[in-house]
Image (cartoon, rainbow, N blue to C red; front, top):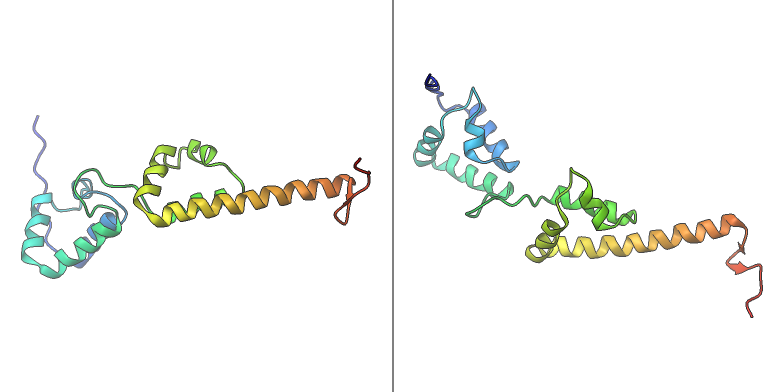
Length: 158
């Protein structure tokens, strides 16, 4: 049995805001238009032709959501890269971070590092800060063990 056609959804600021929000989150227009209260994709395409302000806002939202180019959209997000950076700063290796199902794969992060200078900078800086944090944790462990007092060993090195 054929699926009944979607009812017509007129242009409104609420519908436009929903479309813009979805695009800024990286969802494609086809995916957004599948919603029950959403217009069909051809209707949105007509709105883009008829409403230059809406078309400008859609272009900006697509760019924010990583949908500006052709082909598959990039999942690169500054917020996601910031989460990776913070975990690197805690000393967690990139390999372990990328095993997390909520994180992108390691090869994806390496592609981002090639495509986005900021991503490469954050990974390098996060690794460096993580190395310092690891050294600090080791040093603290040695001090708590009683082997070192004020930075000097209690045993002689010959």
